[in-house]
Image 1 (tube, protein in one colour):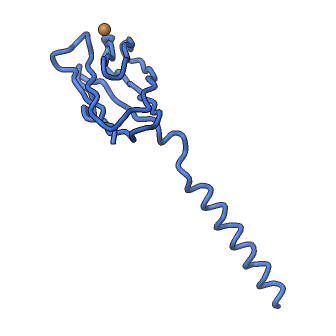
Image 2: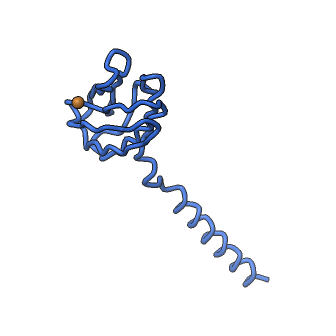
Image 3: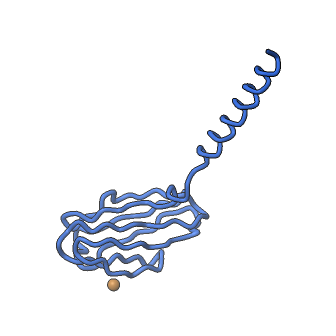
Length: 115
Ligand SMILES: [Cu+2]
């Protein structure tokens, strides 16, 4: 009887160990999606961790192409109509990093906030 309970205790420890491994944030957590719709960014305010490399997935749901641009993040990249691009940014110091869509600058405005 004693042997059985020891075994099940060991098994329980192994299980909780596995659960802990699964609790570690995946790399996907460092990807943030920014949707372009009606020539606006959604969300227009994007919060990312400072001092870390982050992938911005820019998902253009408009039929027209856009240029995702930011002098502060040194990015200038075309995203076609109904297409997606990945933009690597950082590691960024804490602060505000404006971005815009150059083809629809009047409405396509946003900011990355590294914190
Ligand atoms: Cu440009």
